[in-house]
Image (cartoon, rainbow, N blue to C red):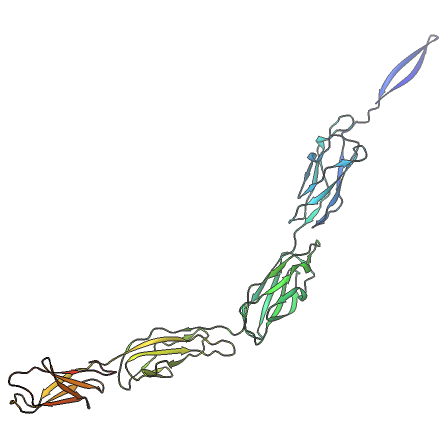
Length: 397
């Protein structure tokens, strides 16, 4: 701005009028500014007024002159000729950022004298927490019988308030004794219901009942791992058994023995009592054939009964042989000849067939291991007499 000053000088009786100008410029320095974020602690749903105040009216100012951390800003505007500018800041979603600034680049603005600003200026710090608290739930042990307790550990993603037993639900169990030392990890005691057998159970947490220190409420439901309520399961391992050869009155031991995963004793029985019987872990042979052994574990107050496991044992027939003698050899035509067959083995029973070559002479029952046949029908000549044992249930032919 320039002003004109009128003055006069008197020289030798004359009055001389002199005009001169003095500069009074108002733009001796570049514009400066302050940036203020009104709400320095922002949570979900919050916004904040941002005020940029210049030292004098400016032009050329826009959002392009601002660097904004973790959020967005509406277009800046001024209602006082360019000194004070305002906008609304909205924080980014799903973040936790305690240190943030809005930076103004002053080189992009000019005052009325077209003098540009220099450098930059930062706002006050503002903190952002737009993350909702989450949680995990672990139940251990996960196999429970009635009345047994387990530890429930609820671990939040951050410090929360508002947690209580009322936010938890459990199936086939009751919850008690909530405790925490840091408001992040909580422990609760779970007690399994009695008289219940349920393989699928869980603990659920209503997250909407807790808030973090910023005031953000949780949302949805957190669910624990599965836990089973009821008697513990068990199984039986029963290895293959070796074959046996039948012996009258013979016995053999079950080997390898059956073993229950619970460690409880296993009992044995025979499913083919016509072939074998069982006493303890000893098997008595009744006859040759397939002996089917069953292994069982009935369970107790902790373990449920195991599924029955069976093993087959082949009890083979005993081998036998026959020896044949004649009462007369040689004999005369029409003379009675008695043939005696002696069959070896374990008390063989049944019959012996006597043959003259391809001709059957007859049969004789075994008695004390011997069978006889007497005939007077032999013709003159040489005869090939054989005795064939037909076998029985325990002795092979």
